[in-house]
Amino acid sequence: MPKPDLYVDFKKIHWRAIFSLRSILSTLFGVFIAVVGLKGFLVPNHFLDGGVTGLSILIEGFAQIHMSILLVVLNIPFIIIGFNKISRTFGVKAMLAVLLLSAGMYYIEIPLFTTDKLLIAAFGGFFIGLGIGFVIRGGGVIDGFDVIGQYTERNSAFTASEIIMTLNIFMILAAAYKFGIEAGMYSILVYFTAMKTTDYVVEGFEQYTALNIISSHSEEIKSIIAKDFGKGLVVYKGERGYLPESFDVRADCDIIVTVVTRLEIYRLSEAILRVDPKAFMFVNRLKEVKGGTIERR
Image (cartoon, rainbow, N blue to C red):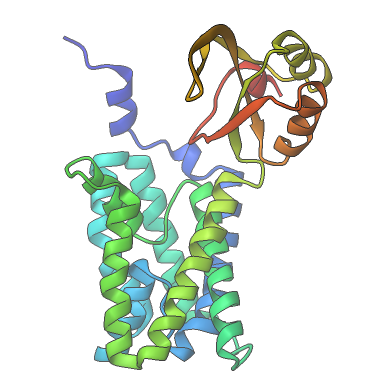
């Protein structure tokens, strides 16, 4: 019985995807920005950002091993897991990104930008998060914790975020022991800033969300969504009512669902409330969106 195409793609290294202009530029820019964050803010002040980079800073403080060596050695197991469990193309991209980061940490000289601890934590986290985000958009990673989190998630009751958070908590506690409580607390701020910045870069400011609307003016609202905003929509048939003071009173209704960006939610909500001030709306965050009017746009 022949193996499905997905299996073949998983085993094959797509060199064209690895060396595409977009992938190369995103990776190079991301690596350089990460080096700026590490050498210009975090490393000289012993602030951790979590993940393998944070672990490298911590071990360098204990063992006096150059961080460029630690980045490669500590990421090797995660790259192997990514190569075997995610895809070989991903594994090669991750390996190249880690090697570039290691070379950048060894050869590129970045001056210390500030000695203010709050600025170091905020901007250090911002730069490292920006760098990680652009490398991910290029198809690779420079931090193996993301790989192990995804892999372990399949074999445990915890999500990838919970696994990575647990690993980073132990690391920050070790940083507090080695460099002091204050450095540990600032490392939490670095990690939070880096995480949020990475989310914005990877998912974009136009992250898609599902807006759900229940209203007695459903036909007018459908027209606004489709004609005025140019959005596609889906209608589920539901039943409204069941209020505590009138539990037996109920009626059929349309549940309108449309996918919008978070920049569009306010404008669309305002338009709906002008038609029906009593409209009930709630939002669901979406992980990924493909097809439909979004794909055409």
